Image (cartoon, rainbow, N blue to C red; front, side, top):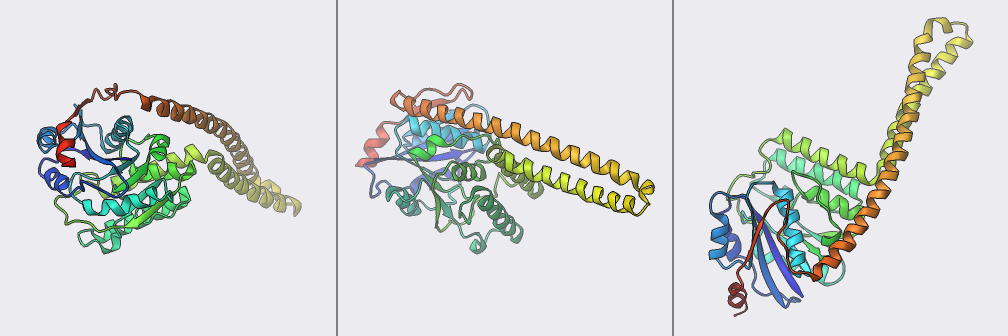
Length: 337
């Protein structure tokens, strides 16, 4: 069994050494542990420091593409490198390496496909009250949308089985945390969480630079993923609301018409007709979206089979990112010794 610990990084030269020093060299249930650093266009020498510290594999993306892209690129690279289990952690030393054993235990036991580290955000001292409320609200929405019980949906400290990694496709350009949980839930993967400790904060979050922007981006991600997997449910609900509003206005017009006052309420009849027509059109859009969603599921299954078949090949350089991949083979010997 091979475990690959992937670390997406953007200008983490100062904190990466602390993160790497804290990672475990051996874990129960694994024959080997390798570390993969995804350098997402850093300009502070993050890649060079990673190589100097003996990181097994370094993926260098010339231009910053964002956290979601770095995460997805890391997952694909880890699969190509033969990972049976993938652990994702941050380069800012937020998550203790000693918690990785607890994180992977449900996967080793066959009880979960994805495990999220629960930071117990209400107890984290350096989180502001606003951030705690937003994290709690966001996690509640994700639980509803995905049908899972994950109290800390925005945690980046997570473990994935090979099967889970093969099934996930990252669409977002902003963050992967919410999207992957919703995808996993909709695809029938078992998602669970374990409580973890966190280290002291070394720097401010680069993802949450503006609270309104973070809320809007996260809400957009949740809505988009939910529309992808439950389009008929969404459009039927919207169509039903429009049609119901139209029926209420029609009944109102009919009442006044029957008592001889219909001429003064013709606008209700017109509005009712428009709303009922829009409701019917929305229903038709829902049927069309559902057909597209079913076709997308077939394409995702084909993509899954292609990705699974491609694992027998040697790792290749990803085309779109023009990323460079290097491996420090000597680091493996040092890690096992």
